Length: 151
Image 1 (cartoon, helix red, strand yellow):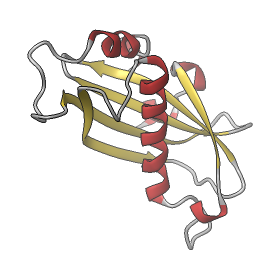
Image 2: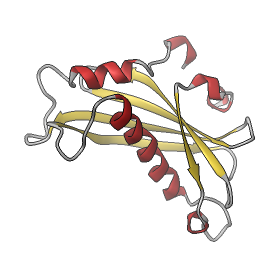
Image 3: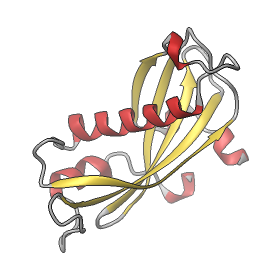
Image 4: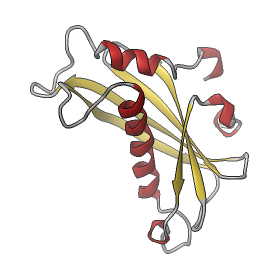
């Protein structure tokens, strides 16, 4: 856990900004847990669309989420600008393990760390292809893979 808490923005290869909304807060006056998962999905899919040539409505391969979790370290509350930082901790033949760091703009301390695992499958069969994920998809994800020593 201490290793995760020590993450810096420079440990990630892609960032996406999110401006919190009033409706993101829960009754305890901080971002609701479900909002974090919305943010994880958003940063991952933004990267896939912009840097991996994924076009969800027509792609022959789709990513199915098979696992996700979040470790929370400090609250965020409206109004705030959040920086979502993305990296790939493991890249397999048809699967990818993402890590998402959640930072509040102007602060260096990590607020939360999420993990999100996609398995890329054929749209019709819902099974991984024999050759794994598409070449362009894999090439885009390879740009975010971190050295195992930095995990």
